Image 1 (tube, rainbow, N blue to C red):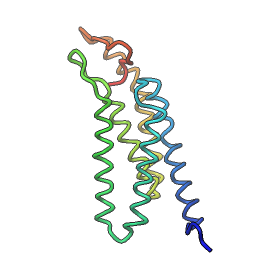
Image 2: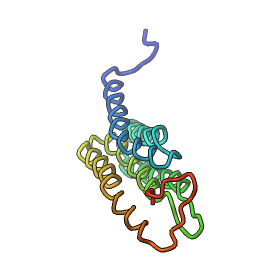
Image 3: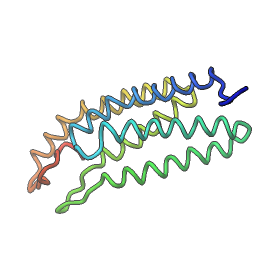
Amino acid sequence: MDFLPVDLDVLVRHLLKLVGAFLLTLPVAWNREKATQAMGLRTFPLVSVASCGFVLLGQQVLADAPDAQARIIAGLMTGIGFIGGGAIIKYEGSVYGTATAASIWGTGLIGAAVAYGRYEIAVLVSLLNFGLLIALQPLKANIQNNAEGHNERPGTDPNDD
């Protein structure tokens, strides 16, 4: 008697992919948590894992319909863009949060890439995203310090463009 008709191999494979999406997102999530405290250690991994899950579900249900799978990716891009839009704030003529918004979009890509088994893309996007956030921070701070009339928003990190 099969109480839960679950293929254990598929379950383990999906679990490993979801965990992989989670782990590859942590460096960026940690950086954004430190910089903005608005989105970070919870939001970024959730977006990556959910993206991975939607793609895995689409692969299982829509295996013979590549057009439908493409619509899943398009929907993810749009939905994650909406979440990222919530991170962007205009304050006294300046715009903040664009790095966080772009990073959240990248974490969605990481989750989708892991689901499709394109680990090289997921790893490279994770490394590039994290690396750019770290490496370009001193340059951004230098530019901001040299700008005339720069207004910092209280309670936020001016390094989060």
